[in-house]
Image (cartoon, rainbow, N blue to C red; front, side):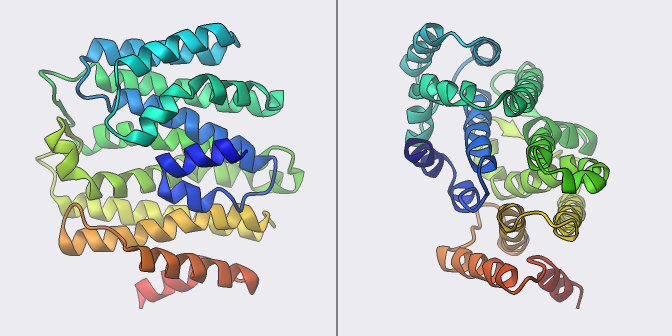
Length: 306
């Protein structure tokens, strides 16, 4: 677990903060699942590779998930590492550790392996679809529908997978399973839209123009706000059904950080970030609410409506 946590911290500040409170075995399952999604994301984002190479790597990765062949994982991982798919040191280290992450994945219970594998493979397939549309080093989305489809593949599917892991072994949540599944993809889309708005200039410089030029930015901001409100309803559904505190903290913290980031970007433009002191304050606010048995999202939502 220590090595998995180290890889998590080096690849995502937000999830390194939010995953540890999860109860076991969900914490281990989500940690491994995040790292698997991050591996696929690394190939999707390898803009300095030709599209054919990126798609091939995604397909190779999907094959590794379908069969537990450690020797093949070592060989393929070495080839990926030699080709340097990223400039980010944490992502490079993660690619080198693919055999270790896969070993951890295949050691999970069968009930956890299948939902993780099926969702990661679907996400990887969708990423490949968008990589194939890259022309002369540039991917441009032309409509809100295309943007939502992209967000679904890279984040909505993650929300769906998380929901299945939350439901696993918790029959007391079965009564709200339908409500959770109905909102799961939007939960993921909300977080992805905020990231896209925040990183739009850097993405454009690397040939990824996710924001449709013909669509006013205000429309995308409004969509992100609606999605975040749905994400909060998802969290409240979990809370009302008696979900463990760790699941509530895990879901609430990224959503509250996303609200803060959205406000910064809307005010200051792309690249604006939530400062570390602000992250700390938001984290403590979520924890204190849960300590008191209160909603971790309702007070902030009420303040926005005031």
